Image 1 (tube, rainbow, N blue to C red):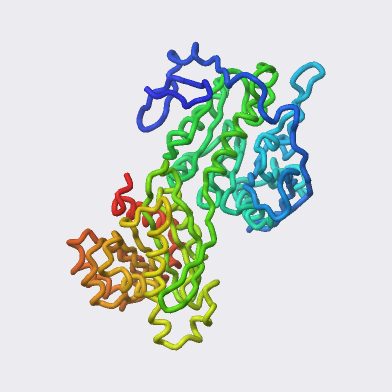
Image 2: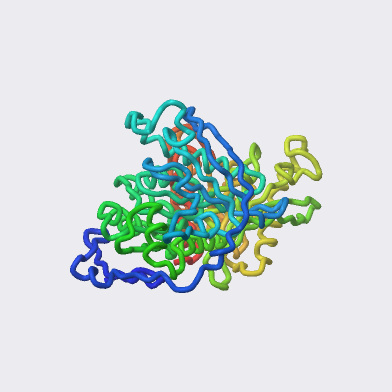
Amino acid sequence: MKHGHGNGMDVMMSRKNGLLILCAAAVLLPWMITVGSGQSGGAGSAPVFSESEVSYTTEDGWTIEGTLSIPASVRAGEKVPAVLLVHSPAHDRDIYRGQHQVGVNTFAKQSLRSSLGNVITLRIDIRGRGRSRFGRDYSSLPPDERSSVYLDVVGGIKFLANHTQVDGGRLGVVAEGASAEAAVNGAIGDQRVRAMVLLSGRMNSSAKEVIGERPDMPLLCLASKEDKTGLLDMAEAYSRSKHPLSDLMLFRDIGSGNSMFIMWANKNPEAKTLEAVVGEWLSARLKDAPGPVEVSFRTEDGWTLYGNLRPAQGTAGADAPGVILIHSYLTDRSVFEDLERMLSAAGMAVLNFDFRGRGRSQGKGSYFDLPQPERDNAYLDVKAATEFLARQQGVSRDRIAIVASSIGVKYGLKASVGDARIRSFVMLGGMPDSPDVEKAGFPILFVASQGLPPITQAFREFYRIHKDRGSHLLEYEGGSVGYQLFDLDRSIEPLIVRWLKPQLTIP
């Protein structure tokens, strides 16, 4: 038996065939739910917004119109989290305005936007609805166009992430009804999306399955008893989520979708608003997601290097293991942005830095203008990065791993051999020096592309001599190498996270 989490919403459930199935006989009486008493902090004093009409173009050419709401509390130059609000095909963006009637002459003083606090919101009209019709109503769209609403979500996420006042690594999505499927498909693969709320969502089996691919993203699902389709879909979506802060809120007789806010307020005028409950949950999740801090440190030969230091999530005060990310000579730290977030969400502190001559670390010149001996000394950058990360408060100095791509593999391994603090290494292509591989006492994950035979053959030989140390070999078809594989197979980055966790003794 499993009970719902918190908010006074305990519901009896049983698990059957891997899904949460509601036990009707056990739950009919307990389903009189009280969210909480008293007024929410924002009720009666909703913040003032600066609102503007905006638009963006999707990958398949639709122009999507929307309203961007920036709370007056957001200071000039400040970057805050943001949430994309997606309505169902039955509505348009106005469903998220609030201002609904909650009595004979009384109207709601709070909306989902205001309950989120210091968070920017973008409420859009999906294709074929509201101002995004352009002569083509949603009801007349062919099935393939309707199924492409997920691209409206993708575009909305990109719009928010690029806004000057938005912290692009702390985004959320709220969706209702049939648009829940589009929201999941459009957002689940984007690591900038840190939490999601589904209001009696409708989802096919493939959308439910991909929820499990984001163990770092909490999911809040809401449904009401009489909406049996939404209830079952939300129960299964919740069961697929692996995040400990995911929740399933089940109600009785308050309708479906965004209308649940209206029905709850009318049935429970003195209770805490449902908007407040959802808004507090979502804003807390976005606050939980720690952003990176720009740091710098010096090497023993005088280079000043810059990078992102991202703290571990969910470590509850305990020292977390650390991971150092080393890019190739044609790139900089930006290629590891998604992996950086994934590792942090999995409980690892991450140092993602630009080595000498790349990115911001060009104080003594560009990489390709440096003499070869100066380039070869880039292993000193990795040594300095290890020392810097090991000194950070909250980082376990003797549990550090390295993920490196291309030439970064050579630099990283040379710096790591003989360092007892290094517990594991991930090689994304590259060609390390053979003596360094032979001397490495830690497990190595070798990732090779068969389209590059010299590296593939070398990695096979390295694995042969190293497999008794807990190492593993992965080979991919094609000629993509290193970080390029991330674009071809989105399972590689989660695989790296799963590989590192046991190496760093994370349960």
